[in-house]
Image (tube, rainbow, N blue to C red; front, side):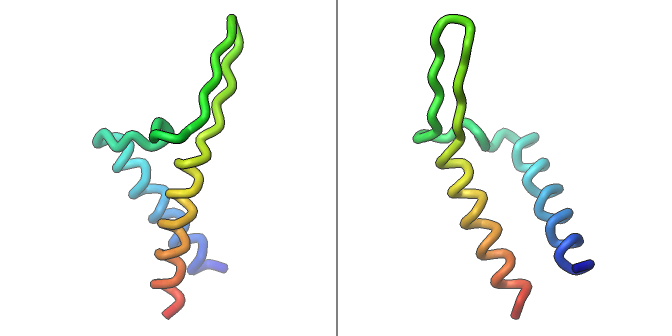
Length: 64
């Protein structure tokens, strides 16, 4: 459990640094955004898929 928390923390720090450097995380092509009047619906489906793939690869590397 401790190892998982350390890896999760490092991943979050790296993701935060990448966003600060200009990575368009959350605004990728394929993310759903609907604006009507005063309301906005936003569902970052492509961003979720990319984050899931990256985390899966990292966890597979750390398990070895």
